[in-house]
Amino acid sequence: MKSITRIDAGISEKLHVAGKPGILRSIAVFLAHSGDSWFWGIALVILWLLGASFWKRWTIVVLVAISVLAALVMGLKFIIRRRRPAGDWGRIYRNTDPHSFPSGHAARAFMIALLTSAMGPPGLALALWIWAPLVSVARVAMGVHYMSDVVAGCAVGILMGLAALQLRDPFLAWLASWVWFPLW
Image 1 (tube, rainbow, N blue to C red):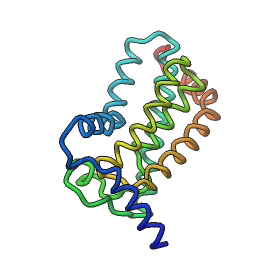
Image 2: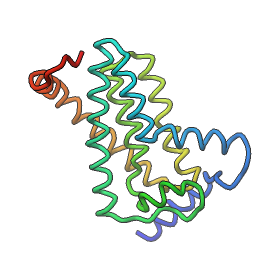
Image 3: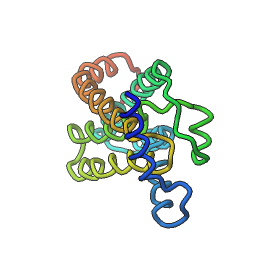
Image 4: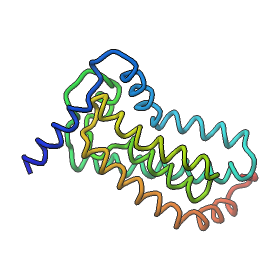
């Protein structure tokens, strides 16, 4: 197991750009933050408020799936307790969530891409499938995750996305029957 951990750390270190000023670092910072849950939460609420009925259903499913995924990933992190790689970038992540396995950003990005493939426009799905691995690699490049963290996060996100798709229709029907205002 130690040899696998060493290989993982070596691969992760080769991708590290957090301490190297320049355009590559700037792009990595942008991508690393683009998967933040607060960003997606705000964007989804705005889209729900302004969007047509199609987008309202999409945003509800994605927002609930993100919330459940966040609880799942946090639970896994506290069970596994793998420390983040040493570094200075991403203090907010390091202070609020010192554990790195699995990557919540990678899980969220891949889950959103999968849900959009099944529920959203094909062009948006394609863009999100390009974005998801970029977010994942950017998290490694900025030194807040090891490569194995993001690979595991991708797997967790895809599995959660598949589960969300199985529960989507019953959940939307249940929600529509209990909510006193029209959702869409």
